[in-house]
Image (cartoon, rainbow, N blue to C red):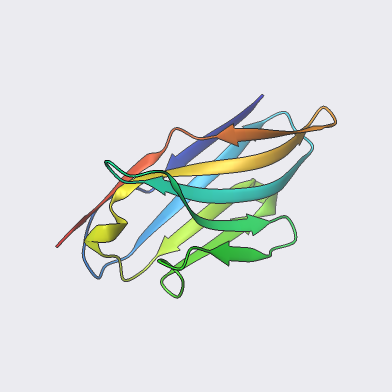
Amino acid sequence: QVQLVESGGGLVEAGGSLRLSCVASGTFSTINLMRWYRQAPGKQRELVAGITASGSTNYADAVKDRFTVSRDTAKNTVYLQMNSVSPEDTAVYSCYAYVLVGGRLNNFWGQGTQVTVSS
C-alpha cells in the first residue's frame, strides 16, 4: 500500500554533514507523521526526529542542535539534515510514517540506510 524508500546514507568523516531523504509512494490519503529512527549495532532502535503534518518537530537530545528534520508535503518526502556528525551517529537510519489509508491509520517502515561516521 505504502512504500518508504530512504536514500542519502554513506560514509562521512566526523564533523561532516549528510542529508537523508525518505520518499513515500503508493495509495494513501494523508501522511500524518513522519519520523527518523536509528539503530546502531548491539543497541536498541531509537527515535531521532519526527515531524507532523502541520510541521511540528521533535528531536532526541543526542541530536538536538545538530540535526534538522523537514518535509516536502507535495513530494511526500521527509529529510534529515545531519551536521557535525560524530562516530556515535553511526547506525542504520530508518524512515517511519503514520499514514491514513482507506480510512484507517497505519504504520509503515522503510528498509533503512546505513550511515557510517569515521573518526
